[in-house]
Length: 202
Image (cartoon, rainbow, N blue to C red; front, top):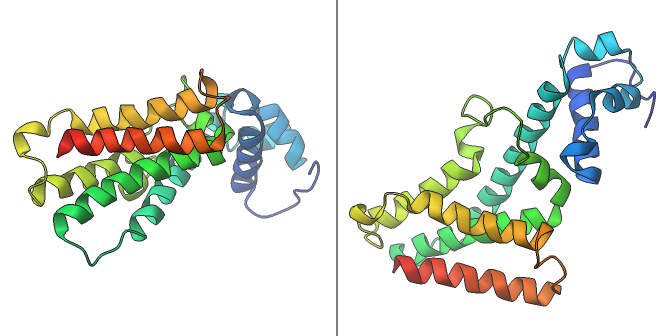
């Protein structure tokens, strides 16, 4: 709420307002002046922490990417451990894909913001590797190779291809011709995509 900030960590407060705006309106809603107004601080106070809109947008993008990664990690934790290693490796890959699409549908504004063009590169010094969606996916594909589900010779390019598959579907469901399908059909299409990925690996 406007004027609610009085003391404490102003940088964090500005980021939290930026995240609220992203959730409500996507990347275009992340405006430094609006964040400064919501925090109830002067322009100069806000600029000491975020020099321009791109700096603020980059921080919100890193937050969104981290949240997506955390959703994927939580999904991995629910994969049953006591099962054959090959089956578990495939289940882990599927869990990351399902979590990716579920997050996009649950947090569309934050998801759109995380991948908006024009922000800084999301590197390991911006998002921790163990919370970076692509690194989490890579770890799952490492498991496929180590358990013999996938031969090392077929590995190159698969990380990017699997990422493109789930990201492409998420984008179609949010902003493309699949945006009007029912929840049941979304679930069916997602299941079919994940089946195709798994079948292509086996």
